[in-house]
Amino acid sequence: MHITAAIVGIPGPTLEPETAALLRAHQPAGVILFGRNVQAPDQLRALNADLRGVLPERAVLMVDQEGGRVARLRPPHWRAHPAAGRIAALDAEAGLRVSWLTGALIGLDCANAGFDVACAPVLDLRIDGMSEVIGDRSFGRDPETVAHLGRAMAEGLLAAGVQPVMKHLPGHGRARVDSHLALPVVGDSIEDDLHPFADNADLPWAMTAHILYPALDPLHPATLSKHIIGEIIRGTIGFDGVLVSDDLAMQALSGSPGDLAIAALEAGCDLAMYCAGDHAATAAVLSACKPLTVEAIRRLDAARGLARRRAITLDAATLAAERELLLS
Image (cartoon, rainbow, N blue to C red; front, side, top):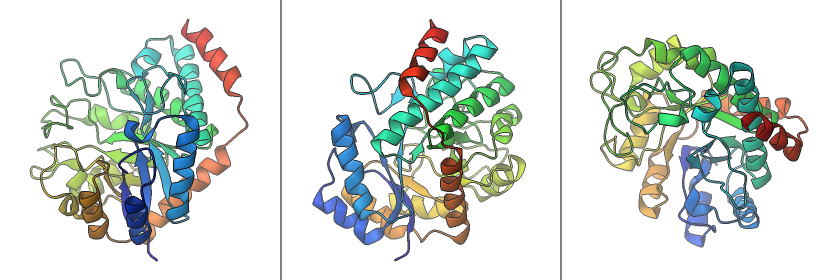
């Protein structure tokens, strides 16, 4: 059976029979979990094991786990991790080390729970006066600093055997509204915003932005734009890894979930992601999505292979103690 070019969410903390049947029937490329799916370590490991039992062998299990306010694995069962903004406030040497340590510790949490992929680091710039949807999720205003700290976090994730996802291409920092709620329109130059992504273009995964950039494409937001994906993300930035859409359930985009999934794939995304977990819309997305392309399969295999090669033995307690000292 072909693997469907989709990443989808599921409703709750267990794999319900109706959801299992849907995943078996459509064989998506992966599942992404959220707070509604996470209760405790044993429960989460069991859920991920059950998902492995119904998903195709190539499928990934993904989670949004940046540190700071974007974290699905939280205390008291998992460690708290500093936001990117806090890391960026350290001196340069300490910041790089803490960013690597945080990536490694997040990666260990994720790997121990059964995840392959963590949606981090955020490589968007933090621009004064813009929406706080990015805010302290960013490593700051300076493109070079963002690039270096983001690279360190990605390297830490890879050391733990977890595939990082840089986001949100080609840059979310200049958005004046939250794309979860409405479509941002960015008329400013985004030349600086591209630099952190270009400097990290060899990373295995990236996520698109639901933002309209009229100077680049006056009709289509980046996720749905053949020009932005083909000429800017694949061309100017030079990214050749797995490209996944941001959540197609966000209010920035208008249209049915199935139509949006088709449009994202036709624009050049390797994977369409729909996170809401509602059965009917998820079924529509899975029915609409085509099988993985040969290029997408190559990219997914390369990402998996990179994480396997880069994984090393890590001791979480030692890493956490070092980070605490640097943050104090």
